[in-house]
Length: 238
Image 1: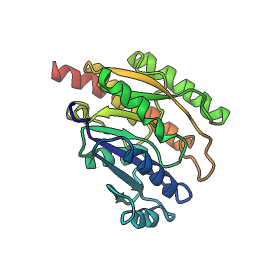
Image 2: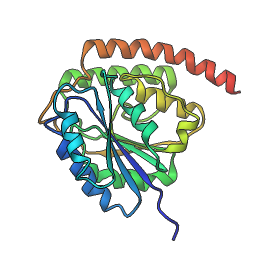
Image 3: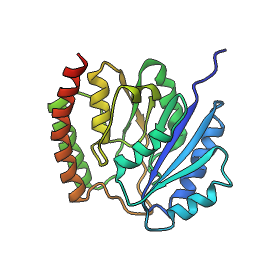
Image 4: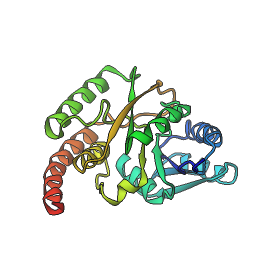
C-alpha cells in the first residue's frame, strides 16, 4: 500500500489566548489518528495578549508542534503566508485557532484530495452575525464577476491543498484577499478545486477582526490590484 501523503497543519492566531491551547490540542489529537506523517504550525501574528506565551509552553508538550511568530501584526494573509513558507509536508491544511471549525472533519477534505488540487470547505450553516453574512455575499458575488466561479465559500478558513501549488501560484496579499488570490490564481492555471461541507461553530471566546471596515476596504483595493496582476502574470507565462 502506498504511503499516505504527509500533512502540514497551519493555525493562524491573533489574540486568541482563550482559544489557542484548546485549538492546538484538538488538532494534535486528530492528527495523531490520521496514520500519516504530520506537523502542526501555530503562527502567532503579533498578538498583544498571551497567545505567544501559551504557544511557547505548548512547544514542549505537543508532538510535532512548533510555533512561529512575527511582530508587528501582518494580518490574516501574512499569517498564512508565513505558515505556508514554514510547511514542509506534501499537503497543507489550514484552519484558524479560534475554534470555529471541527478539525476532525479534515478527513472529509483528505478524502477528496485525490480528485483535486485544492479542497475548500464551505460553511453549511454559517454561524456569523447578519452583517458578516451580507459582507460575505457581496464579496463572493464581486469575486465571481471578476474571476468566474471559484468555489462555494471563498473565504472559509478551512482548506486543504497540495504544497506543490505554491511553486506556481504566488500569493502576495497580507490581508483578507489571500483566499481569493490563491483560488483565482490556481483556477487560472488549470488547477482543480472541489467543495466539501464543514461544520461552522459560533465563536465563544475572543474577538473576530474580519468585519473591521479597514480590513474590508483594504481587501477591495487588493482585489483590484490583483485582477491587474493576474492578467499580467498569465500573459508572461503564456
